[in-house]
Length: 123
Image 1 (cartoon, rainbow, N blue to C red):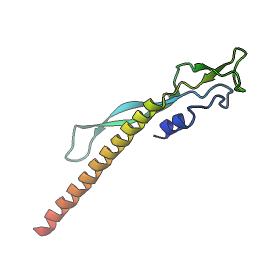
Image 2 (image 1 turned 90 degrees about the vertical axis):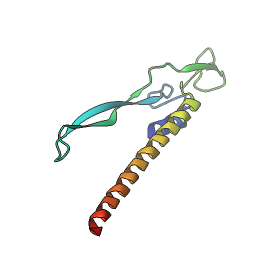
Image 3 (image 1 turned 90 degrees about the horizontal axis):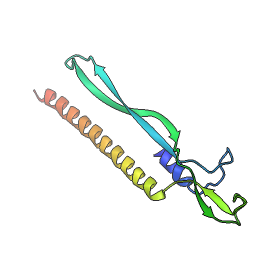
Image 4 (image 1 turned 45 degrees about the vertical axis):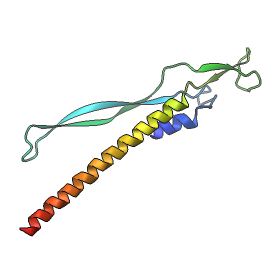
């Protein structure tokens, strides 16, 4: 969500630290298969997803005609970041919903564990 927020915030940045227009960043995830050797769970596989790296989007900036802008070239064309704010917002919503779903799973697992402990106290 932080990378998406940076992309949205810099969607109109025509000059980054390197002097070129801001380049959209994207998160690259990887799946890790981890073998758990806990008692009672021998041979159980757990799939984890983690951030592998954050890389710049290779798409070139799009050019607009704006001869009055200080960053425009000699032809009056201004290089703007190739960021689609609607696409970024859709990614942000999907990321937020995924976080909420994972949080609900953790809350349900905790509630089930507490109920299991309560059964042991009654007997």
